[in-house]
Image (cartoon, rainbow, N blue to C red):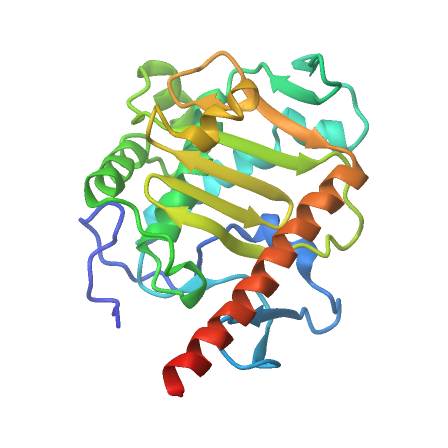
Length: 282
């Protein structure tokens, strides 16, 4: 159990006095809330007996993992993402820095060409790092190799800023120091008032980590030869690429299919755990 006397897990210098630090930024999960008045969603542990779900009012939060300055830094990264051209696409505003690319099979993805690619990379890397250092039950399955986790921490720390103007100057003045990571992002083109989405670990076995993050589906690997990412090479991103990022934007039917597959996998995992437990107890 961490305390306010422990050091911040990011800077490892200041005291981690901040409480309620989100592992997954709240803006990614707020559309999961199914009761506007009570702000309710459900946390389900697939390893427990049926109906052992728990009502929660927010996405996973932890106390005493970050200092106030590092918490503010992550807030800057989140603010940058919410102002990205992707939001304009969803608001039906055709941004000039977005290129729609359709392949021979008819699948379309977008390439975002803008000056903030580095912060885009940093944001998604910060989520992977936060999942890895988290002690929350939901994210215990995400554990990066120690050397890779440390390289992410150092890379994130290199751009630490407490004000947005300071961060802008920093990323313009320094060359990228990010470790090699390839990642794929999927998201729906439109969202309803409620997403009916889930936050779950779809697959996590180093070096590949696949996360369902409500409005996004994220796959990351630091292995250049990773077969899963290679199969999605057309829409994969590299942290060394600073000219554009690619996002596969799905229509409603395609996104619903992804969501249904995710949910079905979790249900199957749930019953497999129950079966294993029954076998163990017999």
